[in-house]
Image (cartoon, rainbow, N blue to C red; front, side, top):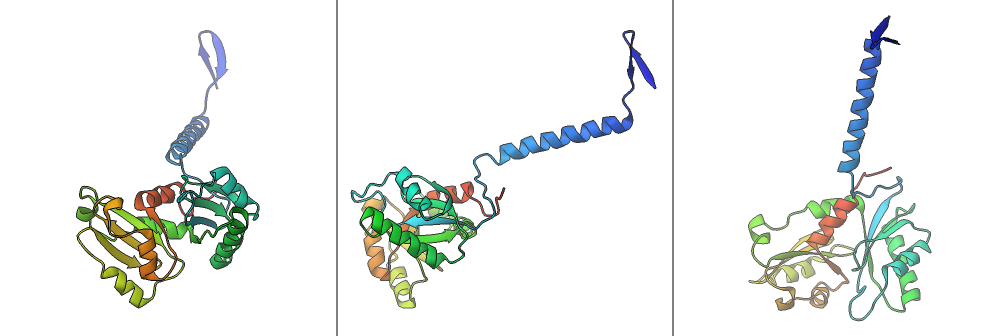
Length: 230
């Protein structure tokens, strides 16, 4: 069938053609919305993705540029290496499924290259998502003026006696809750005014740990969510 418009004959668009056009338009619009929604989310290729939390990076005069830190990880044939702020958080992909082997491999590399021990504690992106969602304290406690929650990462669960010793330190300023290999530390005032420090935490537990602000943990989990693959 032909339609005439302004004296020029042109084929009439069939219902099938119009329906196909609308489906294509809707699909393109949906893709655009999805792209906007995924902005700022880092996807990965399908290999296991890990987050390494490094102890004593850029504190106490031990300054390491993030560009060099990424290069040291890449020398180990780790893929898609990224750093998140300058406090020793490194995201990477690896074929290895042995976290202890990865931790040791990275520790040896950093010791050799930097000249000092860098305890490395690794979590998978799935584990990090769970940690970020965990609420060890009530909203009333965490929203109080000056209150900050920190997350201390451990390589293994603390012994029962060490856990009890730590929780016994609950006071007006500091409170601790242990969940597996993480310690959630509620500090109700400035960190500098707390009776506790990372060193005292390690002494109480009898093991190495590295501490991050829970805000940093949530931002990391949001940027590198589990299951966000190419």
